[in-house]
Image (cartoon, rainbow, N blue to C red; front, side, top):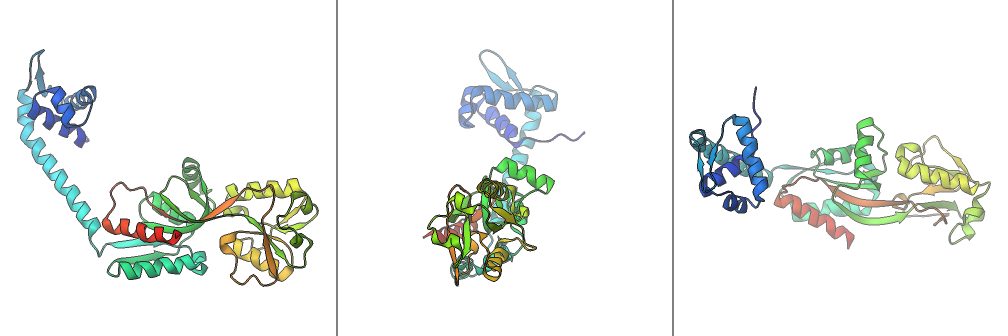
Length: 317
């Protein structure tokens, strides 16, 4: 049966072999003495033999420990060389960087600003822009196949996101809150209202004014963290939520313009030309979406990745 090698335990073995003192070896490894002892004990259990002979006054290598010492040094040197080689590959300027940007971000000025800044400041990197759905890009960040992603979404607890990801229940406008995130804008969900509609007279639409009003509603596929509170708020206000055949954020803007009915509105998707539509915040609904740049949780980042993060952070200013 193949035995899995614990590099940390090997490092502890070599430190103790050199120091011949549990106290000094623990200090060298930045561990407590019990933690170091546990690492040595784990390695001895794997070998099935004592690696050190211990007395109340001294610690010395056992014959088995002596026979494994040089192999351990060689193994650790090879492991360190392999890690350095991995880091060198990550630093290569020709390593392909994957930037996620769903198609809906094309209309956002920050999308063009980010790509222009990358081309200007990192002209030699190999960049691939992935225009997949936001939930696929977030999964890529979690699985470390995507480096950076720009999305419009509402943050949800990371563990819940992982559970929904496992069952295919992630909403298109949801993102896990456990990933590093630069929030470029954070806006409350409100209403798009035709100028001639009675609701347009309010600066903030009160809940009682919605009784009997038909509101074009966002589809459940955008995520329960958005759909459920909006649905409950409309029901409590006495409004009638209407799901159009196309109930995504851009389509709701179009329904408001063409059919002259109020619609749920996500600020980041509002057209630059408002035309004969006004936008109003609403009382009693505290649901926000963010335009954000996310990156993976990988432990070791290249200089290029850090520079990309710095470029993205400038979008906030």
